[in-house]
Amino acid sequence: MDDINNMWCFACGPQNPIGLKLKFREEGDTYISTFIAGPEHQGYDGIMHGGLVSTLLDEIMARYVYAKGLTAVTAKLEVRYRQPTPIGQELRISGWITSQRGKMYELAGKIALPDGTVTAEGKAMVAIKGDE
Ligand SMILES: CCCCCCCCCCCCCCCC(=O)SCCNC(=O)CCNC(=O)[C@H](O)C(C)(C)COP(=O)(O)OP(=O)(O)OC[C@H]1O[C@@H](n2cnc3c(N)ncnc32)[C@H](O)[C@@H]1OP(=O)(O)O
Image 1: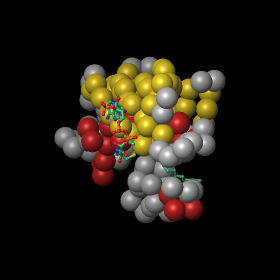
Image 2: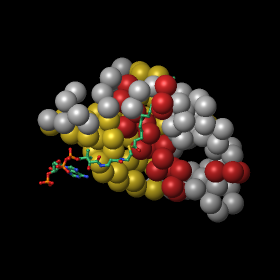
Image 3: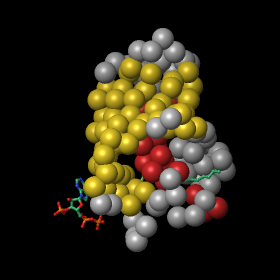
Image 4: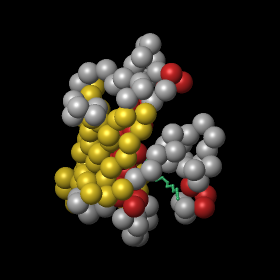
């Protein structure tokens, strides 16, 4: 699962023509990305599709572990949709590690609007593959 072969990651791969092309930065112990959904990302009119909301949360949490140099896969994902996530507004996606036991990391994440309103929250268990 090296970087070269992962360039087509739907959420973050720079070579995927229909991907979300997310970029990331670390602020303290939190992993951050931003995204503006368009009409092609909606379910109901004006509202981001819930599956893609889950994708944003999945990515911010699993990729944080990957960014630490570990081959990480999501083992479990829970999403709470607090309110509709609109298209056309900058979404701030953040994720952080809440605990670690052996090869299993637990993380939390959220999606917030520019005014700070949280539209969705996530929890994930992320497993490390192999002997890392
Ligand atoms: C410049 C640009 C570069 C671009 C660069 C691109 C980077 C590239 C992207 C990187 C960012 C990826 C972000 C996307 C992240 C995904 O989307 S990953 C894809 C989705 N996930 C998967 O496909 C994972 C599939 N599942 C698996 O591989 C395996 O089930 C797992 C998760 C590794 C676990 O398997 P295992 O290690 O064999 O463990 P297993 O024996 O099943 O379980 C051992 C114990 O662990 C615990 N456990 C295991 N699974 C669970 C679970 N789901 N819930 C609770 N407990 C569990 C339990 O205690 C379990 O014991 P039992 O309850 O079975 O007695």
